Image (cartoon, rainbow, N blue to C red; front, side, top):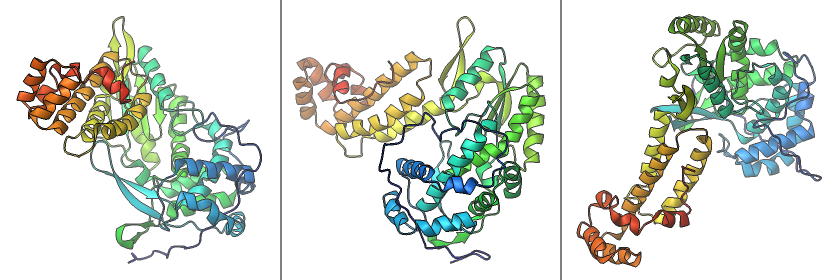
Length: 458
């Protein structure tokens, strides 16, 4: 089934032998791509596409696509199949890229749950198109990234969310206790193509690069059941180019805030400006509404606000004031709730899994969570979370042992006294209540350490 005005999908894929036969490439410090030695506000070069199809650039792109893995696009091709597929078709694809005639395939529509409820729409390009987008990104980022604002932290080489949080903390510590917290309504779905392409045309001199970016923006979306939807706005989340294009579009806002001397942090479409009073914050909010309207974007008024900085969150963190008026970091309430919800889901007592399996899944989640929130200055909260997680695991143990006689036997074998084991076994069905009693004598912290359960504190 097709909607009016859509075109049939392309079925061809392509590949090339990109395997390195010599020394392995050096690991880059950057989270994205290596920076060029010099970068300017624009790249008037007309040979950017030739840079895109150079072997070293393609090797790095292939390596990145492999490391990111990801699900197949509409053609079903997996990341593992990409290299073999390219070997038979790369010559043809290269010629199309250099001639400016390459036509991307449609993206696959995929919905994932959002942290605050609702669903987020992703547009998953084919593996081949992700590879080409990554090759484009590496060249464009190396040419243009140096011209972006130093206050922009999202999806840029050598910059990350932790740096953004620390910069915000520094502004608050300096006395800018009010924040203008702006949320853009469905930003990636509302990007105006003409506005974005106009910004790109001022920076990029190679028309072939501009043409393929336009085609990526306008590629149709294949929804469930094979329905194809035309796209007239938005840059779908799911492809490597989308975050870079967001930085290109929003750089004009950054530059205007810089020109006016504001202290701010932007990470992709999240923007926080720190000021010294509510009145100043209201003026900045009016300015931002005007700037975003000029880019044909909409401010989500229900989620945006001028407020005290410690009442708002930034990238999962919030701030609190310690004795001596020292501003410190903590996990935001919303992020903490999301973490506890996920732990409850993993440790449900009716999933029929062994304790070892549950701890393995917990470890996979908690290690990443702990690494991201390692900047939080709240060891007491982390200790309480550790105790709560062990409490849930002890309750799960009791649920799995079920009968009082089994509970008594297991607890005695783990060193608990006859009286204490009998007391717990007598209330065999009260798993949560019992797991908070003397059962920690049998199921000790050291026991969970042996199972390799991560500790959030320390």
